[in-house]
Amino acid sequence: MSTRPVVLHLCVSAASDYYEGVSVVYATGCLQEIAEHGTYTNVACIVHLDGSWSFPSNMSEEARSSAEHMSIDQAVLKIKELNPSAVVPHMFCLPGMTAFRGLCDVMNISLVGNPAAVMALSTNKWQTRAVVASHGVKVPEAEIVSKGELPKMQPPFLIKPCNEDNSQGISLVRELSALQSALDNAFQFDHEVLVERYVPLGRELRVAVWEKDDKTLELLPCIEYFLSEEDPIRTAAHKLVTDHSGKPVGFAPVCRKCPADIDQTLLEKLRDLAIRSHKGLGCRDYSIYDVRVDPQGEPYFIEASLYCSFAPKSVVVLMAAQAGQDLRSVFEMLVNRAINRKKAAGTRTVGMKG
Image (cartoon, rainbow, N blue to C red; front, side, top):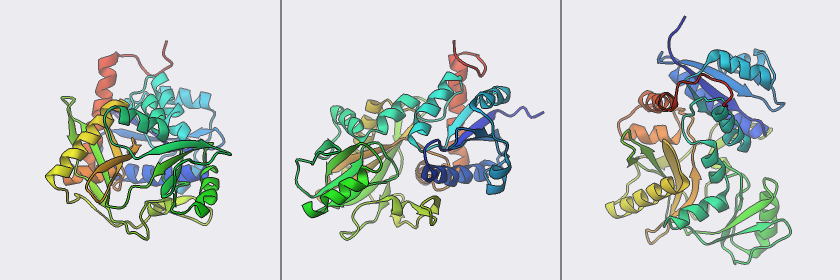
């Protein structure tokens, strides 16, 4: 019998086919990459749209289709039997980023990355920007509207569902004639919509920090996405390729550079933005931010993206590679840290707290 620590990979979606596709794309990339390392016993755990669970031998379509489905009660017993040392979340829907991470905490399984409460905060764009702004981070002017309401600010502005990720439902409104269709699009995804002042295109960056063993924060090399005045914002189509039904099946072609060419003045501003945001939101292990730099060189916090699936194309993995750390070293560093957190907290085995 293997004595390697068991790492559970929590996958797929309890919310939509779209997020099922996102999860499969990223989780498959991770599990294929780490399968040969031999450091852990990696187990895929799938939450299905119908509420059932399964534990396929791998993330291939054949393995997923043939795996036995079971109830959540049976799945909890199965997880207790596996006694995982840590769990890596690969769920990108709202329940996956919140409720199912919370379930891992209830079951006393150490989670890699940000806990459920932090994810719940970060998925609400209005609340997130309020928190980081209170910690001295520059954010664009914004307001929130509900169905039947119209924004008070004048274009140009962005319309975004307040609690939706992967740029779904986002529109750039340059003229009031385009407002209603943009609102209708956004309200398909949420009952509240963020109206955010459009920051003129200077640069589009992703900025990340991760925690070192001594708890200090290190800024990772940044990624720059190259956009144009004709196509000045990143939408869902810039990120993932979908099939005829709209389900993600792979990564979209992207024009980006890592490390981005950033002078010292802007670098220090980005470091300050990321560190203040990480601390303000209460992040753990790592955090990633979408940042818009205006033509005058001022960076604005746009959104927090507090997840990583450790696939070869995951943002943290790409950034870390430019800092001299490969996927294996990043994955094992953060999994071992999660395992050590559990050891430091006590010796309880998997099971309900209490």
